[in-house]
Length: 340
Image 1 (cartoon, rainbow, N blue to C red):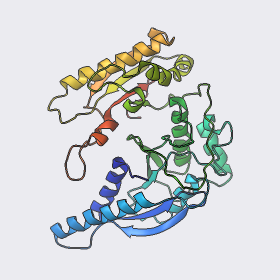
Image 2: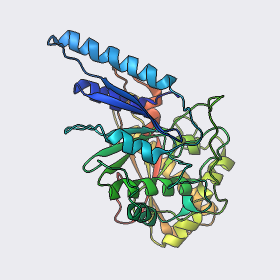
Image 3: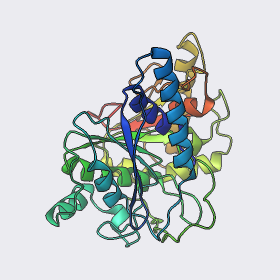
C-alpha cells in the first residue's frame, strides 16, 4: 500500500506536534501494530526537526509495507481499535482505504447496503451498540474513500457520494466528524493478499445526497491539461450520466463550480477563467444528457477558495500529485456551502 501524499501530510502534522501514531491494519480481523512516537524529545531545534523527519520516513515506509493477513476488510472495528489509544489532545484518526467493509455489521457486499439511507444505517448500528467508541470530538480523516482497484468494480459518482454519506453519518452518530481527503488513491491492487468479496455496484443511479457537495475529480473527467476539453468525451459523459436522474429528482437549481490547481501561478486570473470554462463544459455535457438547462448554473473560483490544499511537499517542493486534488468540479444544491 502506497500512502497518499495527503495522508502523509496528516502524519507530518502529528510529528511536528511531537505526537504519536497507533497503526491498525483493517483486515477482516483488524490488527493493532503498536504505537510509535512521531515527534522528538530533543531540546535542540535542529535535532528535533531531524528526528521528526526521520521518524516520519520510517513510519511511512512501515505503513507502505503493511499487508492484510486475514480475508475481508473491517474498517468499523479498525476505527474503534485505533480510537482506544487517543490521548486528551488527539489530532484525529487517519483511515486509508476505500471504505467498502465486507464483514458484519456493515457488510457492503450485501445487496442494497451501498444505496441505503445513510442516517438509517447509522441508526441501525447505534441500536445494536456497534458504533466506534471514543470518537467524541474527534476528526476522522479518510484518504481513498471510494477509490478501488483489482476485482472491485469502480463506484459511480452517486455510489461514492452515498458511501461517503454513510460513513459521515456513522462517525457523526459516534460523536466525531468525517473529513475526506480529496487526493484520489492510485496504483494497482497488490497480488497475493487474502480475498476480499467484491461489493456489487448497482447499474441504476443511486440516490444522491444533496445535503453536501458532490465532488467530481479531474481524474474522472480527464480534461486535457490547461484546457476545458475532455480528452475522452464518451468517458466523461458516462461518469456524469449517473448524476442526471438525481439532479432531476432534486428539482432545485444545481450550481456547478470549477476549481483549479495553482501550479505555482502568481495570479488567479487565468485559473478563474479555466475553472469557469470547465464548469461550463460539465454543464453542456449534462444538458446533452437530458438535464434541463434551467436546473444548472455555473461558476469558477480558480485556486482561491475554501477547499484549496497545499501543493508543496514536506521539503517545500511543488508536487503535481498534491496539485491534482485541487482540480475538481463541484456540484451543490441551494444552501449547501462549497466546502460542505
